Length: 127
Ligand code: I3S
Image (tube, rainbow, N blue to C red):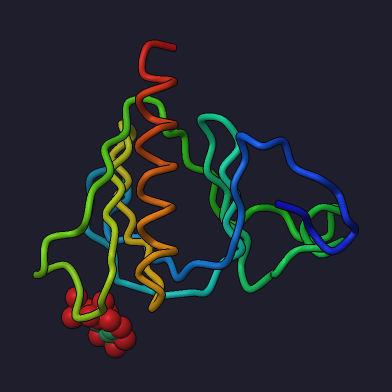
């Protein structure tokens, strides 16, 4: 997984473009705001940067992550149908009381992300 500066991420890292919205923040429901985000999984951290597809834009420091999610103690699975009218939606619930939906029209891509997130959560469960 490389950005456009050809910076090479470690194999344990995953990145790509996903649609994302928060649905709950600190346990409180918030209004959905779907955005296309450059998404990076690094260890137990998931980063979202708005509308960037890589390159100096996010890595060069111009554009800080819009949202950083600590995956330790989080739960992730396919979202129940009532969460969204969109297809291929994954729901992520953090220990801090933030709930996110992540989505793509490409089912296999979402499937890969779900698997990567589940692996990260189980790997870092006891930290
Ligand atoms: O679950 P909801 O509230 O029906 O979600 C939809 C709305 O948030 C809508 O925006 P406003 O009601 O704020 O105008 C969004 O545009 C939709 O995308 C949301 O639904 P989906 O089913 O796409 O998650």
